[in-house]
Amino acid sequence: MALSIELVTDVAAFEGLGVAWNELVDAMECPEIFYRWEWNDVFRRHFRANDRLFVLLVREGSGQVVGLAPFCIRTTRKFGLTVEVMETIVGGVSDYGNIFVRQGAHRGRVVGAILDFLRERSAEWDVVDLWDFCTRDSTTLHLLNLAPPYPDWSVRTHVSTPVAVRDLTRSVAAENDKQTHQISNRLETLRGRGLRLLIGCDDIEAYWPTFCALHRKAWPSGPFHDAAKQAFYDELKSATGLEGRIELSVAELEGRPVAMHFGFVDAHKVYYYMPAMDRDFRRDRVGSVLLQAMIEHYGKSHRVFDFMRGLEPYKLWYTDDLDLNLRLVIYRSASLRALAYNFAGVTRRYGVELGLPKAMAQAVKSRIRKARR
Image (tube, rainbow, N blue to C red; front, side, top):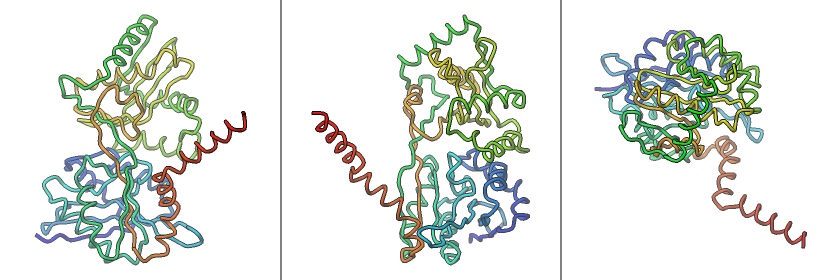
């Protein structure tokens, strides 16, 4: 059955997509909280006001939506040239992005239809820059397979970050037993000192100012030091449609919160998104204690604990299962604008692959040693 594409560029039309959008996300094999319409809508209003919507709905002959590309186009300047960059609406900020495909629909057909449409409308963009497309969803692999053969395109890709995930349904998990036992012992010690744990706290509004203050203190370069980002999260945590999907957990000691977590949760999965710890209690390992308590709590009711982007060592104390987030950049091969957009990133990566930063650091250290002699 032939597939058809509907292009949505109008804000009013986008605002009317909520029900159909979320129904498709819920019908995916690998849905993510960042795919939901509410996440995209709140982010669009806060950070995409000057960008153009370019949302693609893929329909079967029956009219059912079987795919969706949540794209927009932003205009930027590189080396004096104006570059039109197509991205996912929440690209670069959300931990996951992708083309949404209904479970049971052929991913390759849906992705192919979208790529064909982008080629037909290639005058409207210079670069398609797709961040954090996870290999967990094979839609990413279909995109990797289907995009390069287009004769007038080039595609570059690299790993943006590994992602650690714990399967909570396993009776025996691959853990760093030494570390987890130490944290369990610390948990019992702190309970003796009056530790209070609130996992999945419902009183988000009451604890929100405290969480923001704790996060600002713990992370000097974090989002809550920026008024625009603060406003975004203020709205997101209360967004209609995300009720029951916000995860807030608290560890209180000596009468005050000393570790907190703000993230997301659905029927099957917990998203470990934004932890914060009072560094005055760092030696008590209160952050690790709260994390372990969350894993134990949600292990009774959920299937997956997702540690999200980044591979900090502590995440591998609890799992050895990894996925990869990829960045895919599709661009017209003969475009000066695409060359200008890609130049800095490609040059930087080429230098890293040649080992230039390490070589330069070693040369500087060598000169310092010689100067001290």
